Length: 446
Image 1 (cartoon, rainbow, N blue to C red):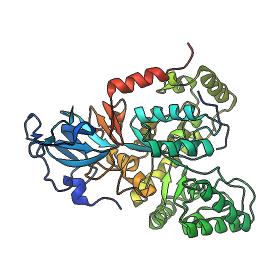
Image 2: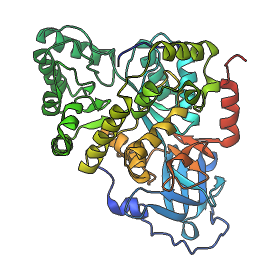
Image 3: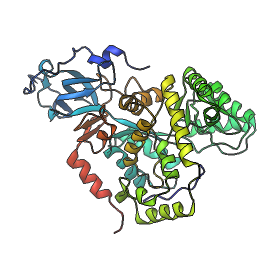
Image 4: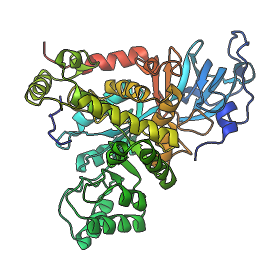
């Protein structure tokens, strides 16, 4: 299905989030009623309405119960209490009784294969989508990914919104070459530049300075030659794998808390990819073989993953490393530093979309509440991308990227698995359609 990679390893107003735009908060005591149909509407078939649904706001009032949410032209056009919000005549009605509607989620660290064809890339993106991931940030881009991204945006493909980083910068650079590389990647149409390593501090500073002049985001690793202090001073937009924090964590809680506060003050988002490390450190192959979604991986890939795990023993201090990662993430969260959700998929035992729930659970194990995890998966991702005016919340005017769930994810993040339906840019995919697409994706040979 995909080739195995080898590698080392602000927000919307509180009132809006609490009660919806121009509406009142619904009471949980409301009784079930048929949706009120607005007479004389000509909005027609491009209009859908979720009725009697519980809306996850992640605001001061976490859940608005018994709501009607109207979608018109791919955006949320109306949101309000069931009994006072009419459904446009001719709209397709989706019964939300007892269900929960939340924003589509963002996987902010994926590695789509650079050598994959457009059809293969679209197939991988579909695995994210059917699992409720409506935004994907690709960390290792190429021309084919740019073409697929542009096609999604121009033609409205039923696929996640795609952000593509340039080929990672992992070469010895002079400051002059660093500045030129920034210009080249921006001209090529990439959404951001990813530093990886192999260049010195002078080249890094030239790179981030030129990127800042051009308004071209820098998102990626903290090269060892650069260090966390320079990355924070440069206000690199994101840091992947919480690189650069281990030394402070080893020094003790005070040093780590101070670094976490500096991260918040710099406004830098961290994408921890905890599940990546969990797989790397897992010594029990039988547990890895129980991970969800493996029936959507090719048999050859699965065998390659198993072979690689047998040949590469996890580090002897794996438990201490995992605990240190959890302490870092917990400190960042406690300090109010923004966190993102990323899976580093596709990769060993990490199937697109399916591994997303695993990452959500890892963040809970690190001490985050389900609400904090869901904010990282939705609103914080939009803020990091600068799209908070159009994405990341269930609110009027927002793009209709939505996930309908059978159970409340604020009680358990695992409830986001197997959604009742997914909507992307107003295209509604009910559970039966998601199952059909998944069945078509089961390619693993018996």
